[in-house]
Length: 136
Image (tube, rainbow, N blue to C red; front, side, top):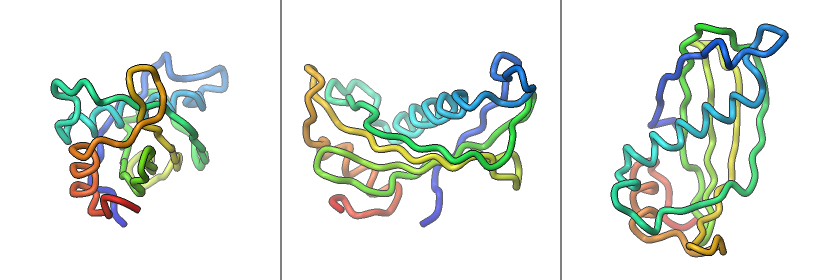
C-alpha cells in the first residue's frame, strides 16, 4: 500500500531540543498538521459539523535525527476504517532518509465526546482516496 498524500514542513529553531536535534514530541505535531491538511484536501473540513475525532492511540518509532532547517516530508495514509475508529500510518523523512514511522488510531465522536460511527461521507472519501475498503 503506497502513500498517496504528502506534505512538507520546515523544522524551526523552536523545534530543536538541548541536544540540538528535533524534539521527539515535535514529530507528533508534524503528524497533526499533516492530518489536518489531509482531511482538508479530502474536503472533510468544509462546513462539516459532524467532523470530530479523538486520538485514541499513537506509537512512534524514531530512526534518525532531525535538525533545524530541514524541510521534512510527512506522508500519511488511512489503512483501516472500522465502525467508530480509523487507523493511519505516517512517515517523516528528510529526502531519502526516514526519520520516523508513526501510527495512530482515531476514534470518531459526537458533540459530547462519546464514540460514534464514522459518517458515511467521511468514510467514503478516505476509502476512495487511499484505495481501501469502506469497512475493514
